[in-house]
Length: 396
Image (cartoon, rainbow, N blue to C red; front, top):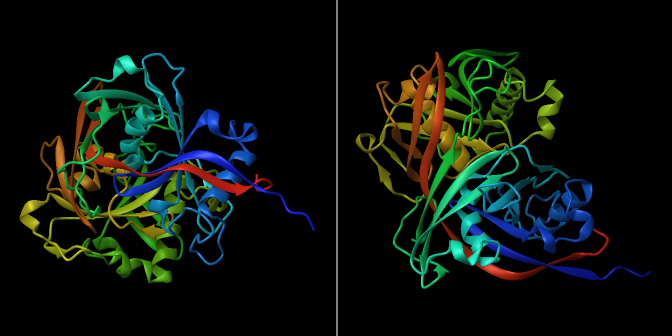
């Protein structure tokens, strides 16, 4: 029996923040995968090694976690005032699913550096030394991100002394601005607060009733109080991910949150929309020990946050969820704002399983509605490998 040969596709493997992904230039993809659709999804699934019933992605570049099963496609932007268009695909590990419904804030830090490396940015935009402000069009959600990429001798500066909890080695800092990260808060569907309220009650049959802040900023997110779930907010991955009952309960709450936010039309659709919304729980500050053994003191943080991604407690914090945290913390009455102690604030430092993260947001009230002009945070990025990925020619 004859079997097809493998083909090779130019690709760059990068870390961005606390995530890793395979980056492609749009024009380098096979013609059938240059447009959204089944062929593109099948290609990315095969590159990452999904679906894998063993959950390991051994036959691909995924590393068996939501943080490492990601794909990015970049192209020169056709949108005025932008340098690069950026599409993000969250690749399921055990299902034949690529979720395009949201962004990855961590990999957003790698988009600017990768676009420069791929030659997608005009040379005139790159200083000999200093910082290049790369304007990114996030095509999944229709938002602008500005990445401030450090440049030395005309090249991206990747090494440095910026420490990021959840990443073992220091690197150069990439400051990110998420411009107008929330939907317009006009009380209509798709607004920053889709229900028009900063706190709702979710009634989840067979599970319970929970106070929840449902917010669309950075990424649609369902925030809960840790105490209402029987948690402290100091949990690490093993405390949640080894308990199938807890995971099922949280997924049921997430599904009902998605329905209330208008992201799905019925509960069954939640299983095909795993990337959004995120679900997170918050608590007031407390001392705890991180996954690396580092001690975090309550006095050094404003609140505790734990978040789930693709059905598992995240090892650190998703960048887009951090935007949601910063935005919600700036708006009085949200569960995030209350957990942080209330008051007026334009930035918070929160504790997550790997350490701490500072995120800022500029929020103003206009005509009785909240608007967020930008959210700010810093990550780092580094090329891990470049060359070609190989996939069987009949895999897409």
